[in-house]
Image (cartoon, rainbow, N blue to C red; front, side, top):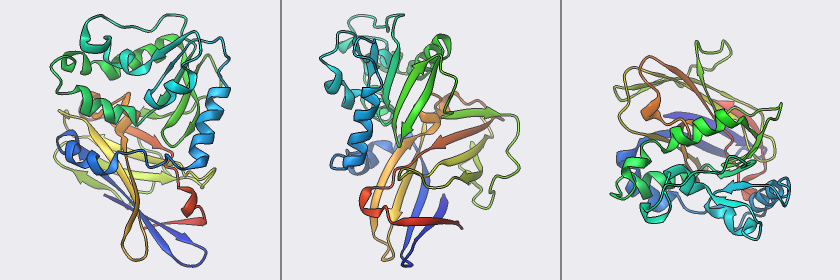
Length: 278
């Protein structure tokens, strides 16, 4: 695991720990952690609304579960979950996004939901295994790039110059990587180190660097949680490795991968003002 100490001006320590979970343990974990903890957070809701405003009213858009209702009145709207799984509901008909699709409005937490909803479902398990590759290949083929992100809310647009990288395969690790938190994750994966950026917009950029030792036969997830000075867990959330579009089951052996996150610090803990790695 990774330990990152975040200190407030008054000396209170909030601890963030990122733990890798395999899909085998995901089921019982999600019941307590993968919930809409930001439902009452005005900043998150406002940010999602701002992403929607960036999409022209007549544009074709594929959207995640929690943002579909906000754009349902538009003429060209598609369910991102059907695109991921490749079939319509109950697997009765093949589903693909129209070539004219111009925007992807994603909640990356949906990839955790897909793992639970589709992986072992007899109607979808065959198409589930190719879902991440289907999304990734369409993004690459059509020239989509991530242009805006806050926590797990991300907007993909076509043919933009500025690009946010959610994951990347590397030839070597960066020289300024902090390797103090390196550790082995089972027999298949090694955490090489991390980099942390400055807090902006109540998020802090977190870059994690991994190396596979052998093929990984399953998907892994990052769990990030805050603990106060009384060791009470005050906030927690699960994130997909490789943003869900490049899951660990596709990494291959002897590969170095960088995965990037922008964890959101809830409004009530926003007084944090500096970071100290341990």
